[in-house]
Length: 100
Image (cartoon, rainbow, N blue to C red; front, side, top):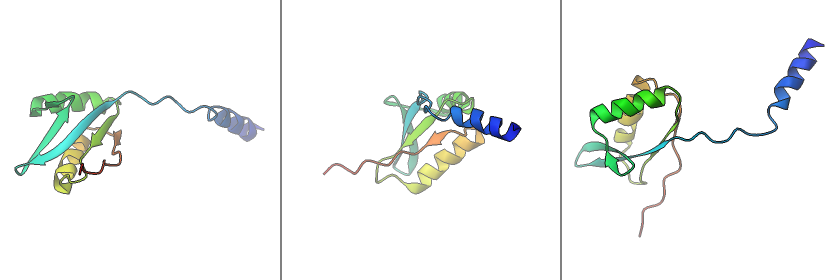
């Protein structure tokens, strides 16, 4: 009886999806062998990145957007840096194709 009640409670909450959490979109690019992270059209310095990473580590989602020609090593470096700060909610949307 308890397992059936527990299953009913768990399934009842699955009817409506949770609204998407508001997060930040960062754009990662590699320019002249240097990784660059932009948030709202502003290049983040290391202290700015660390401050935002602390916020993201508390649960605010972050989307890492990279151009189709982005450097994989740069993306890896940024993802690892986020992980070191304890960020666990990182989304990687499909890159947009380069403009003709």
